[in-house]
Length: 333
Image (cartoon, rainbow, N blue to C red; front, side, top):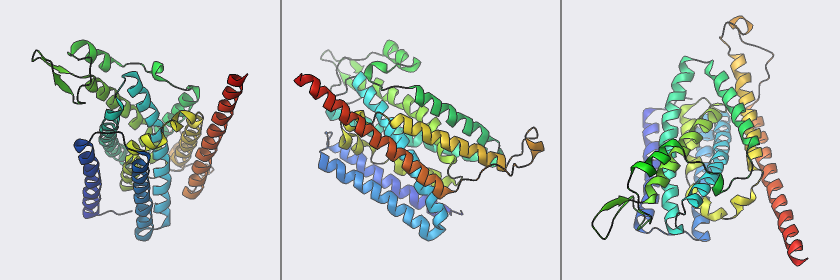
């Protein structure tokens, strides 16, 4: 897929413009968006992604469009998992509701920056070293196993990392969020950092860890840097509004980790298979490609990912419904 410089520039300008609108809304009126407002924004961003995929289909063909849609769906699912951690962080630091969308937007911008850096590094590594797919595949399988071991998380499960602990110990931090800024001035005229700074550090370090998961996953679907970048951007846009739209539904997706684990394991195996086909390592098959390794088409990958995530979502909602009925029956008894 050949993408000219002007297409890259036009895409970046358009995406920055959309982000700027979001920033202006937050800067002008920090608030908790209504269900109607959140739903409209989520529908808008999803519609943009769908239209972009149609554009890719028209310009570059169905194969590349399939890669975009598969990558976008995978990254969107991982981003929803990212929301779980955001929820835990904001509960842990008791962020007021009216400031939560500001935290979410900054977290999304940080995620975009970090993923952009990892995409550039990953693309450069793939160009120079095809064997890096063995590492990506192993990392995704390891991540899948880690997700399977995790249970339902809550605010008490959040463990402060070294950077957060240092900031809380070394920086003068007030006890109040004040107006939601990073600093505040006391009645005595002393300037202090607010807990918002600690929250931003927690969000930023979390984004870094999620970028480490998401980039190998998307490169397991497409090797085109343009599609990798746009799939990640569209997957992150609208998460702020999705957070408020879903509300308590996030807590009901108890099997999402299992669905994501299955998806990541599948992509990891797919990466291994592709690495074997293009193998250049001398200690594997004498440095030649392995013909018997299975080839998985992009459309089959899309169906498997959609089916897995749909099953995990439906199973989660069914379990949550059963649990609520059981609790009501116990309450009546």
